[in-house]
Image (cartoon, rainbow, N blue to C red; front, side, top):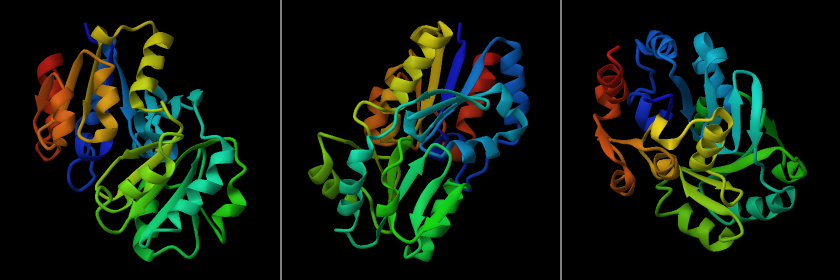
Length: 265
């Protein structure tokens, strides 16, 4: 029996226009009536996820910032931040690349520089509704609640910024490709799967009682942490290889189609 479902957002639950399924909230209430909890598992900021799920947020779990921050409604369950001592080196690495812009992702706010490009600012506000614009990120590297530093690349992140960040920062830090234009730098070992396993322990739930959906490389550990793992039809090939099942594409209402079938919604 499934007791916990975790679902990625972009490329998974959201369609190509970044919209949630229209019947999602009634479906979550129906799942809850069956004793099934729902967690959104995303690289996004908690404030962003809370906003998007506001009608049902008090009855949900949130694995945010790629697993660095886990919330139950407004209650913080876990936080696993970057050491403040690592932040200056991360920012200096960002400044060696053109058209790459960092975001310091604190538990409650995302911090960006005022000199960033207009495209980057628009993309950041799409994912981070709580944003602070500052003159110099170096003046904000002493925080003890930085979940990650996200890097936006105006080009292709996998071929441009990813190898540079990996050479400069690994293995002391984890460098994760989280989207076509985004790379996340986090404390090693922090990921959605680690957060999922912590939730399983906290809720006394086994992997066999869990289902998860994902589409990108930052979902690999999440799918490995559950028995009923689904890669979307549009998933990255490496993720598809670790999934037990395939779901229709995000543009085809794939998550909801699986949930309707599996839970007779």
